[in-house]
Amino acid sequence: MQVNSEGVSASRVFLPADQSYPNLLQFFINQFPHIEVKEWEDRFAQGLVLNDGGEALKASGAYLPNTHLIYFRRLAREPEIPFEEEILFQDDHILVADKPHFLPVTPSGLYLHQTLLNRLKKRTGIQTLSPIHRIDRDTAGLVIFSIKPHERAQYQNLFRDRLVNKVYEAIAPYSEDLMARLPITYQSRIEESEHFLQMQEVEGDPNTDTLIELLEAAKPWAKYKLTPGSGKKHQLRCHLNTLGIPIKNDQIYPILTPYQEYDLDFSKPLQLLAKEIHFNDPLSNENRAFISKRVLS
Image (cartoon, rainbow, N blue to C red):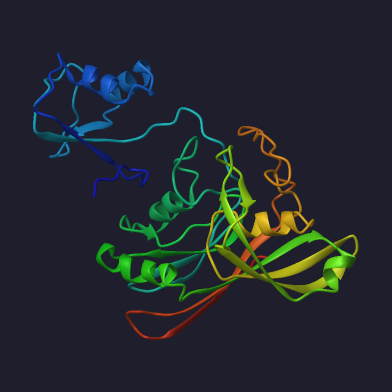
């Protein structure tokens, strides 16, 4: 796996035999029309496009069909996340990190270096790190990475087969009506809404379930323990919002608030924490239990 000096993994692209271009720059412009021409010119100029042998190529280089090229992402400006992750556990097979709020797990959009994955690659020197599950960038807490690519599927299968017990904590409004019903296992059917950022509850057989318990109350807020039985996108945020207690500082539920990417309000993190994770290790057969050191405010 090719990585640059900052620990960022490369991408590969194939040059088809049934196409022809006057040079490599024109191929990349045609292949990735959503990326500006100037961006590709800069990547070539900075040596971020290479052949399979690791040799930097020129924009004017010849198009050679049936070959692979390697290229790196480049961001002229990236939001700085001023919070540090912590490594809670590491052996030859997995690494467990305690992620701060606001930090994405993997590169996407405006984020490349300021991601948990690339920070950990740079910090540990382990370029084969790969997350075996995800949490939202707004959510803090535990994320597990596999170290050896050929073992990743065995750990991922634990999540697929619901053999992992995850516990979250959230701060949300205190509800007198809900208190009388707790603890409850809330079930509903969640599907994508018209806006890709939001999920919505719809009619039909439930595809999500969450055990909701009260940890402590300090009106007008309360701290809840959330144990999801399923793993749908935004499940916890959607469930609490439907129950009339949207999670404190949620910018997606109930009202979608556009992110100010370069002016994030770090004083208002989403009050959701991936607190605990428990599973039986498929390689060692040990019972694994990890607990985040982070505390919701």
